[in-house]
Length: 164
Image 1 (tube, rainbow, N blue to C red):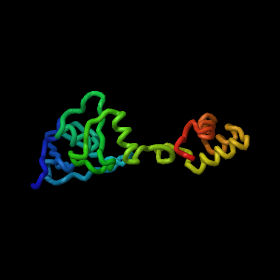
Image 2 (cartoon, helix red, strand yellow):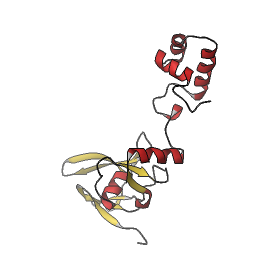
Image 3 (cartoon, helix red, strand yellow):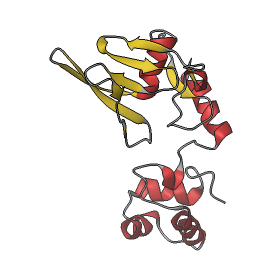
């Protein structure tokens, strides 16, 4: 099949994964359709003999083709694309290496791209302008819906350091 190989999914023998990141269930012998999780990664629900588990596709591919996750390592997409689960694009890396990859790819989640962010870059600029004009952190916090400490950190540049 031209450069692809297949391996059983560890702990779930009724599934097979292809080196390109495609997962097959033996019951119907067709590719399973993964869903995207909140982080943009592809995830599937595996079931076998009464056991169920949600697993990210990159973890399945790495465990099947590279081996069990070494202690202190996490999965990394070498090209920064969370949907590219080809074994050649994946590696077990340290957390520091993964952070460096994210910075290099521009996929580091910070600021308003963070899922729970209440501020935006424009709001941070406004906080800084008003802080410089002498407005209190508490009054800005009340208006922007954040804690006094969060407003103060954003206004003084101790957080949101990437915003000019």
